[in-house]
Amino acid sequence: MIDQFKRNNDKQEEIDRCLRLIQSRNPRDRSYAAKRLGELKARPDILMSLMEDPNGFVRSAAAEALGRSIELPAPEVISHLLAAIDDPNNYVCAAAVNSLGLLEAKGAVNQVEACLTDTHPIIVQAAILALARIDPDLIKDRLTELIQSDEYLIHLAATRACGWLLHRPCGPFILKALKNFMDAGDQEDLKLPKLYIEVLAKLGTKEAIPTLVEIAEHEVGLRGVAVEALIEMNAEEAAAILSPLLSDPSNRLRRNLIEMMMQADYAAALPLVRPLLKDSAITVRETALAAVSKWGDRVSVEDVRNIAFNDPNPFVRPQAVITLTNLLGQDALPDLVDLSEDLNLHVRRAVAQSLAQIEHLTPDGKAALLRLADDEDTAEFAREALQVHDLSAVKPMPEKTPKMRAPFPEALQEQRDLLLTMLEDWQESLPDLQKHFSLEELADVDQALSTLIVYLREATD
Image 1 (cartoon, rainbow, N blue to C red):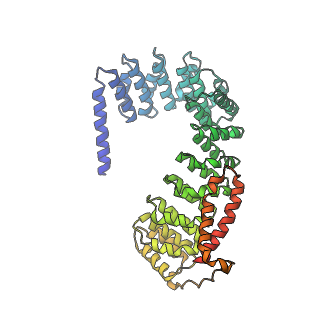
Image 2: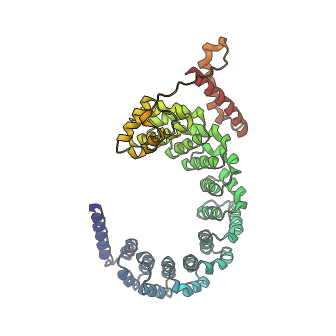
């Protein structure tokens, strides 16, 4: 209640400041005040009065702000905006048309449509986007023509409207425009190709996949948005081609690529994904955890355990707890018991949830669960585990079947640890070999090494 009062008080103070700025002789002050009043959704009466300001920038700012200051019905506001369409300043006219679109003023559709034939591109641009909001069916029939315009602003607006309205017939034109842009080699303005890529993804234009893969491989400024588009389009065939980019410096790109690998269930990328559990970027470590969990990579257990206990980010650790349980199952119980008293509340909650996945509780496991159930901060998260386990008759965990000993030559017993270290080093070096071998070949070696490493680790426990 106090916070709400403070917010309301702060808002009123800023409104009062804007009302004072409106009296300034400096048109920049008046423009700023108009913009802020619109963002604050305040005083449309003042904004309408500013539509008569002698300065065009102020009138433009007021017209733009009116579209954000109120909601329909608002006949007086609509009337002022319609009058502004005839303003001698093209920017004022465009701002008024844009606001009519933001307000979805259906009564203004004829006047806005007439602006499509205006000689000034900025007004046509505003009309395209306004009609996409007011009457999508009316503008859809014109988009194929408009998107082929040589005027940058008109072409840009038509492309954006295609994405808003999911107008798939324009997909081939947008793909052609993207190819032409890439062939031209003009990389100064990336706004337009980024928009092409985003719209092609929304339209699901599968024919664009080879071009997007090529961009992701070679165009540094566009590869991130291209990978995001390929993920949105479920382009599974791109996973194998783009996997070498998992070592790219861009955190966002590495994260998106891991998501693509998971979406395509491309487990062959494991040798490249596994090292990212130690990545410096939080989002990359989180996504790598999801990947090794999805693919059941038991070789990653030690790295996952280290994250669960020691990661510097408090929100990555709970995910590692859940991943550790997914990978180890019953064998994760000792770790869960140790983590049940962790100072991190989110870790304790993750432990409470994970205990529901454990088949048998030891007395220590039972005690940990009861502690979590008695804590009001974790009780709700322990509820499922309480239902899964019959705590009134908990039995000690059955004795484990002795693990099979690896068929290991007696003569090499003293070298067992050395061999394990060498196998682990070999596996860690696999990402460095991708220049000389296909990822599928590396994945075969990785799987063989994983089998031996896990076997030797368990046999030496």
